[in-house]
Image (cartoon, rainbow, N blue to C red; front, side, top):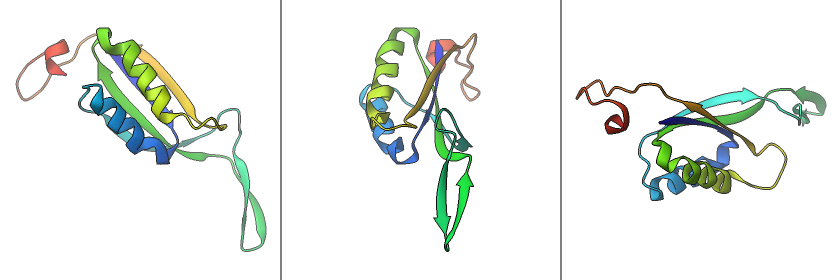
Length: 112
């Protein structure tokens, strides 16, 4: 079992959610985050004054997936989140050692 963590542009959230749902994956955690990568933020003009925005608003999605569906899930997120512009985001994959559904006591793949 793996944990996919994707940091994407906020307006792509619905596209990614719908794409993962059609893949048969249920459940995700979504957080509003701020950060920067190679783009190092940008400048904006507000009431005639220019100022630097060093942390860009992003959305972080976390989805636990069975190892058998990992490649399809990563490809699906990448395709749904891509705009072709700088700042599209990143996808990280980490192993999950153990999962437990609190309500039923199911564990690992059955807990997904």
